[in-house]
Image (cartoon, rainbow, N blue to C red):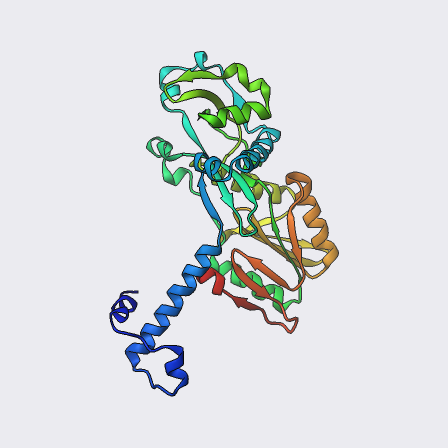
Length: 322
């Protein structure tokens, strides 16, 4: 990028110059290359989702932002994520250490809005050791080997995403969160039973709640989800790979079935499509309907994967690198 900035000081040749037969120098070629990369990256950034705080979202999008957060709270409420608490039963320290709920509004590429709620879990770093809360994810090497095995054996392949994954995991500690401001009114509108727990504090209307599920942002949420998901696979008869604990295998009808996962994104394979269908159904029985892709072309964590059915697999990472 520094070379690109330096090249901007000197006038770069235009496409018209090149078309007319101008032979650029090596430095000009570098400058043109960097200019293309940066311009392209800026274009991509402008077309990606725009994320902002809920307060700003209310100002920019008005009632549409309120409706987006209502949908988000509906999911959280339906999955029993919170338990409202009587503020008078909490100690001074419990109130002081209550984690702040962060509410965001995202504008997608299609201009639709999505509400997102997470926890500001940074204060937990003071009393939760990182080593006690870290969660494994599948390694690049293990994932690539899973792709090669699927291609070599001609396996049927599926990728699947568990919706609201963290919310399936129970919180194993007593965690208090608090909500303040206009968001309190929105939550109470969604569930009027919360109103009697609202108190007035310096920040305005305040609602204290016990966090019952592993909401995104808590230090231990990823680990709690991993333990739940891997434990579910073990109960289904899968065995974790000793070299990578985010790869699980099970022999079904004489052939190996493999699942590799990165948090809530799953890559699955087996030579028989009906076996893979049954495995997906068993997982959905526990965690609800997943977003599933079948066939020879997939996008997994931004990586494009294609199985041409000739014993090879194609991997394209341009979007991932961008």
